Image (cartoon, rainbow, N blue to C red):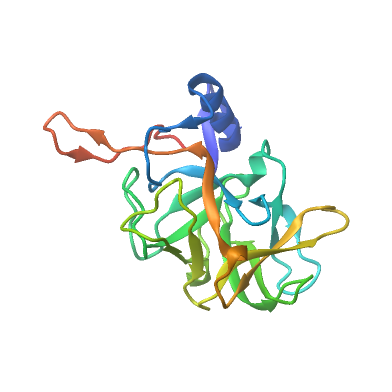
Length: 226
């Protein structure tokens, strides 16, 4: 998960993302007005201006799983997430994400999925959000429902992510960590919708559908080795 063969060498997916961004600009598929399956993006919490982030640092309490935080830095490869289908529902690359669709968000650099459960978060004692699994495969607690206002997830709109199993919303309320992740914000889940649970798609690679020779829609990855 998250590896690519470049000239006989194994390269992290984040390196390929940066290479493509350098060649083609900051956002591939930038003409698309909606978010699609297979896209690799950063998500901004609008209220607190932090991007959803993870890293190979585990919580010292609660589940002890890989921590998920919010960071103010824009240029950080640990803030890339891949949009994928669930264990039971295939998500064809390039198809628009529907409002109400269940997805998984897989952290590109570690291959673990955005996850939640009934452990208390370390700072606010809300519901803990972690990164869980191996090579993109975890369990049913990795599934989130996209809540948006129309038929599809539009890139310019604010959306919410509701955890399917616990019905809680991905949120940030501003609590800051000390060492070893000083200044990063706690990300957790909360039962009630608020300004703290609004997110927007930002930088990344947006997969787009292409036309097949016969004129039918052929949903293909911009780079099949991702």
